[in-house]
Length: 196
Image (cartoon, rainbow, N blue to C red):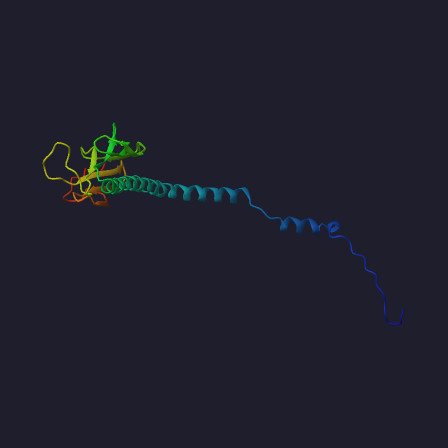
């Protein structure tokens, strides 16, 4: 070794021997306390309780639109088939009423072209005494069987009890379908009032 330089050998003790390692380890641990978990759970429950009514409203609205679209599709299909086949085609309620489903058939009570299932009990389809809508070969509505009166528009009201609006499906005398969503029946129509 050269003069003026010293060589030191330092021995390092492990930190654990001094207890510092243990304290550093505890401070570095990650995780949640029971209190933090309980507060997070409480906030999640409150947010869920706030979201449930909105989700329920969305589900009812979506189902009402689905039923309305199925009925509209049946009316459009029946009108198209009446024109293309050149025979009267009817959209008729099942034996228990519109609630139990409906079918598209060659009128009167002929070959069934399509059937539609019953709707869930919470939804109401009110035909206001209309049990069938029949389209003539030119696409317009046919008068009720045996009637010589002028053809009136047919209207189906699709609603759910306790819901703030309903769907109204009007089939006009010319055979066109008009859809309305409202809390009350359209003015000047023969639509039934929605289920309260």
